[in-house]
Image 1 (cartoon, rainbow, N blue to C red):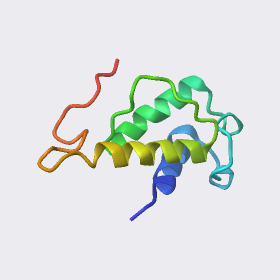
Image 2 (cartoon, rainbow, N blue to C red):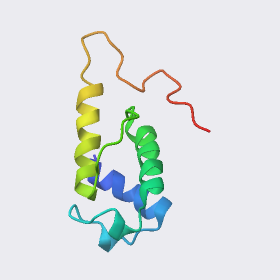
Image 3 (cartoon, rainbow, N blue to C red):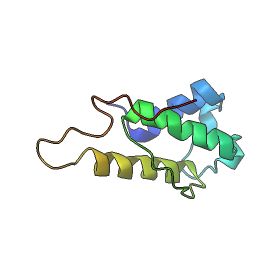
Amino acid sequence: MKTTFERLSAILVKDYKVPPQALVAEATLESLGIDSLAAAELLFSAEDAFHIRVPPEAVPLPTLGDVVAYIEALIAQQHAGPAGEQPAGQGTQGPARS
């Protein structure tokens, strides 16, 4: 099973044409060519890939490692609901996008 870092890296390589050798946890999104709009789009991609719901509130995520930690925290929070509750993103259409 791939790690969150590996899965996110695959998205960055495929969709954002980031060179694989540049993908280290300490890399800033800016150094990877990811501006604020691209970062928002990346989080939309993460919602689909990781079956999570990213809150609308802005969160500072300066490095790739910060993005990975944020996604892992959302996974832990949203997939660990009370017994009998369906995990976030499962069985729903997800957020509307334009």
